[in-house]
Length: 557
Image 1 (tube, one colour):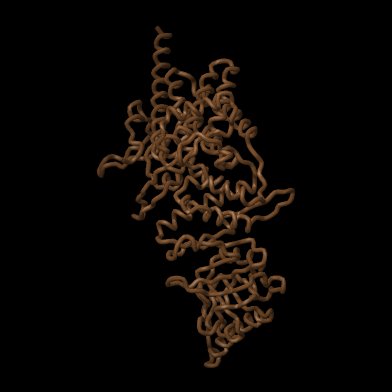
Image 2 (tube, rainbow, N blue to C red):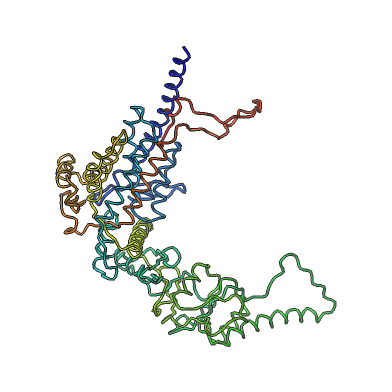
């Protein structure tokens, strides 16, 4: 009798766990289905209403998912994947979600057959290791200095984006910017800091073809006294400060007791002398342009203007850092610590120009700048925002190649090769892990299948042809041309992917699938709002019942 009760309890517990697994898998598939149609060059666009009531039109996986407001924890976890991929390598945000969704989908059959999630995860991790070793085998090393190869690679990576219609423009901008700010670390390694040293400045108006990479920095500021100060200086000597050029105010309330009438004029004179001494210390170095992050008083403005020095005040810290990198200046905290080596002499031209209704200061024509500004022009703000998103992806791809110069075939060819090799290897695996391992191999085919669906070709015929070509792990470069839907050689069509992006996508997708499979209960720690007048009993964490996990609304309609 006791044995029967134990078996019954075990079955009930397993059923409850299975319900949670199914709910998680359904939520993940729902997220994957939302952005499935945005994969590939012939993909659909999504129009989103953001929290501020604005409109976002994009086919960037991360941009779409971050606007979603979902209730199910598993769906939230899937959205995090896309963000991780975007922050880490900047591309492949849609692929990683589609792949993770498919990995969970194929695991559902094993959950139904009462396979333990740990067994499935073990098989998946084995598949991941083997997939990465296949990537290493088929990867090609490229020469980073060969511009045409780099251009082809970045173009194929942003060919899936909205701006692919503008041809080489975005790819050119991305390569110019990343090669400008690249820093040699020695031993053939280069570091590219996109976030710190590349600023994208969006100015509505004109047309997209007028966008360019400045050999220097552009800031949305005018000189302090436009009438008195020069707005155009050739080969300027630049001093950068992060201290105020005005009289210091007391930290808290400051009381000054004046006994005689003359004391007031003495006090004012002391202030003036203090500011004058600051200006004298700066003017000793004969600068043409003084830029400070803090305030600059009228008196300081007068002294500088009198000496023929232009000044800009209240500049952002990040912009100041970029100017320092571009013209070779050093940001100084106190004027009395200034040295000749702190003066920036690398800039060729300082000029204030009016674009539209606003004034912009340009510090350009720099000698070997290590920071730059990309000036984007375009018809509307929505277009510029989408171009900026695509440009960030393009720069990330260029950065990945500079850091790790390896390529793999695009157009689903990599996934098909990995799938074929894993299927071959699955026959040599012993025990019950063989079946989940084989399922993981089949799941990789989700990427080429989705590409074929988005091209509008016959999916079954195309996939059969591709599987035939890849049958024994050969023809590693045969994939789908996303524009026409043809089965073609990716080398000839120049459709490539960065090794770093692919490897990161595989790792993120499989590790996330394993994590979600190992969840067997969802416990809510959120307190429910009580009706007014109800007794304040201490609330306990609520454990979801069998029915709740299925009934929870996953994605907003």
